Image 1: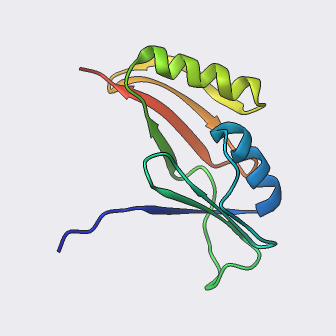
Image 2 (image 1 turned 90 degrees about the horizontal axis):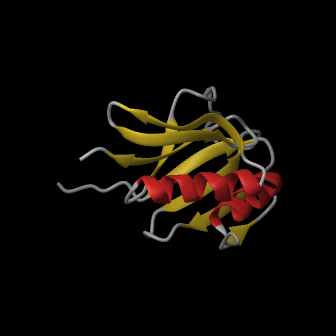
Length: 123
């Protein structure tokens, strides 16, 4: 069986506040926005859902910082450009652009502490 991940959910305190945050970072509005859920469709077709941690069923026992949402970019210049874009939109940067053993990367945090890693892989 061939399965492909095409949908990611983040449990957030306020879907409306998180939707505003992600709208700024992604330069697009959510395709769905309600009191307990917001949904974005990324350029590659992957869906990003923001679900109220107070209403998710079954109740989630997740803690933040234990995983990352990764944004793969073609090269170092694209990583630097995205970093500048996110800084201008108020993202909290917890790791400035840096070379690591797997490639060039930076990490931001959303309003709920979820880690957002942008990277280009080393050749």
